[in-house]
Image 1: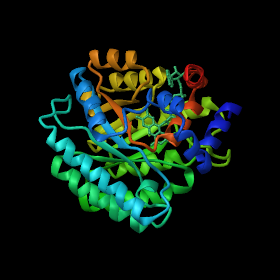
Image 2: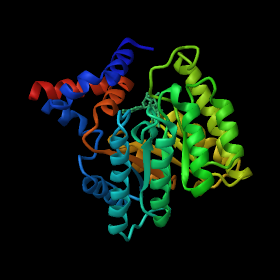
Image 3: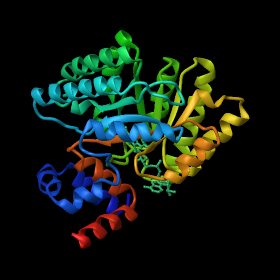
Image 4: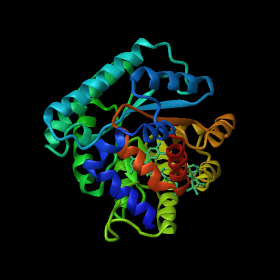
Length: 316
Ligand code: FDA
């Protein structure tokens, strides 16, 4: 892992810095490249403009690692208000015919306090989202949370059905997790993984992560034929997208069985060209005031993003 990646992932977890940096105007302006705004209305407006480009959306109310039950309840309440705002903004015309989906982190819903609190909050969200026919994707966080996250997901899915999983190709355990989730017919988003993990837990070499991604993407595409599960590839990497496309084409897997997901603000050219070619594209749209750790992870991914921050600092 490069020094700059390690450094920004360290910063992403530094709670003291979170307060300080969140107050810097130039950091807030730079974060705006990746964050749709502070309010649900701004995020909904971005989702709306995407549907005009033939692209779907998934909305994320930023937040993670809350430390009180009241904060966890408030986070779920904010999502419920978001679901109501999405309903009020109907009709939605999109490639899949439905409104934007939701993404949430279980540590935002109280996982660090107790899995029961996170489960109750996720269940509340799933119940409300179901009235709108949308799915709640549970983002995957650090490796220490994977078992608890999957247990909460299984419990809420058994009751409501409309939750989907995220798995991280960099984890050594991920082939087994993908296998189990595919067998259960889960809709899965496959990502490379964005947290700092020890070598015993995650592949340190990018080439191993990429090879795992391609292997697991192929497994998920096979599952679309075996169980009708829907496959989602969360990546900005054109090579990963090409690998999924080639495999789908070679095995007669229709475009309606899978999609590519990008983070808001990244590779708009590729988003548009894929959508024009008939590949389903969905954009992950984060919004809210708690952008600090999300922004630090984006800086960790790509040194060019750091220059972007510095340019804003010089203009301040
Ligand atoms: P990677 O970072 O390996 O880059 C490979 C290539 O992709 C680059 O060489 C470049 O060509 C292109 N590229 C990547 N980033 C770019 C940029 N900013 N600008 C231009 N080109 C770029 N992680 C996690 O741990 N849990 C989660 O729940 C999620 N959820 C999630 C949802 C969605 C929709 C996405 C796209 C990503 C996530 N992630 C995530 C983040 C993910 O784990 C990963 O850190 C990033 O997607 C970066 O990895 P890539 O696959 O994009 O390629």
